[in-house]
Length: 303
Image (cartoon, rainbow, N blue to C red; front, side, top):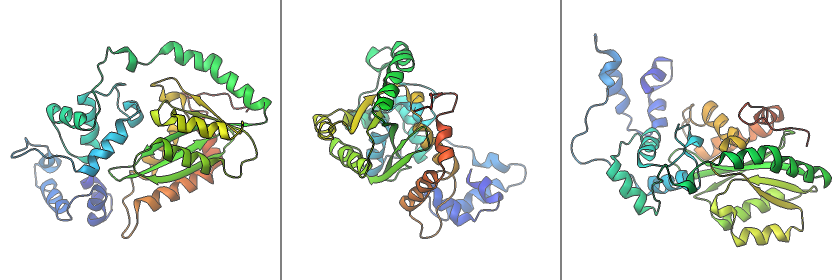
């Protein structure tokens, strides 16, 4: 990918900086890819020698944030359960580090995460619950919001690359959009802080649809919601059903069109880039509305 970007006209130094490698690495790649009769084949992976690479503490915590309360399909992976193989694939794609299954298992144990067995029912999608959400639960939520002259928002969080930078956003079918960036992983206290920011200056009740992340369901969160005296109500999506959340498409859009594609300019911070793109989405309500019209979402939009 790096060689192709340089051949498309990008500066080698900018390209290699976006991947996080030493500046001289790109020139070795370009030289290998320019050999007559070999070309891009010169960049094929070879069996590693010496001691296997490991993750830094910061990268380990990023892996925890990716996995905890999330579905692999949210990252474009085909399988809906976290197994050692799936985790290894995500680590290799995001960090360009290849870990064996044993090493991944040791990492998961270190992080307090247990690989999920495909037949373990607690981690399986529940088609009946998903269908009930579509036919009964969500229409009821929409009616409640309409009766209270309120609004329905869908909420989600996402991390970006190997950095400890995360963001939360909420989308409304009429084009409403709220966002906030933060450092580190999400816990109950931080979730309440974000909710307070979202609810500031609101004059209409908000019915907020969230996923089943443990941080969303604590007593601290329940106490805060109760303190709003009906201005905020939380509703929980069925487990492992990211396709029911239009806000998932915010992160897909960002990673497809901006944050994950264009390299950082000299002196540019990833946090500033994320903030700028989120602000651009907020200024484009038609884009936000389109998230609700995607075939995988297909929500009614008269609320």
